[in-house]
Length: 290
Image (tube, rainbow, N blue to C red):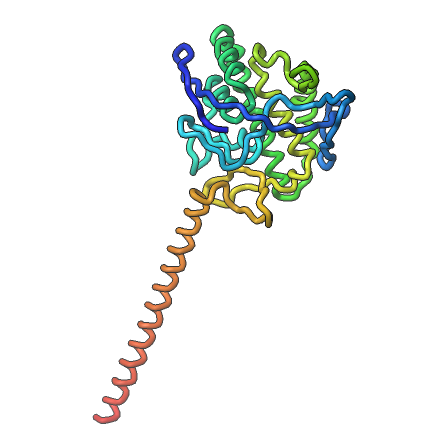
């Protein structure tokens, strides 16, 4: 997904990104997601397919004209990574417009949808403030859930909260709509008018991630003061950093400095011992001569 153009809407900056198609097939059962279940391919008669509305954001994707980065390998991890941290700075979701900027860059919302929701947020500012608060709550829940998974801890309370508070609404809003003559698209028909629609898509993305084999590949960056989450899809499954260019390089520099300091300390200790030994030996010899 690459940046193509940007546009001023009112007094706000709305970046536009090219859409890409990534078919993913899903199976929905009782409007809940259980960790450990699988997402299976499903084909309907007459060459009709079920697809989610938007593609997943891919790892190692960043846009120069936005404050956000999309390197988590999934929309839900990228969403959690918008929170404040000592290394990455303050909370990036500081307004409803910022939420839409992130949603458009990640593929959660299309450019058309983002523009429509931005205009409605101007019409209903109080509602926009409430949705922003709900977004923070969802982000905190997902962070807690991912943190427990990374530490191989069970998260029944978080899963129950995700099912009850978020997925119930997300799946209730989903519907099969015509995509073209032979295809049905699984989408959110009210995505262009409901200010909370981006949260439906984020919860849905988190559910798909948690119900897939990639749930065991969720990692937390080992960089100093980082804490960003990502899905490790490397061949050997040993990825440690959100980005090698940032956290990986910083940690290498820290280790290099530590080795250099240790080497200097050892050399200083060795030099001191050698000098003391030589002085003592010389003094002793002089005393015997007297």
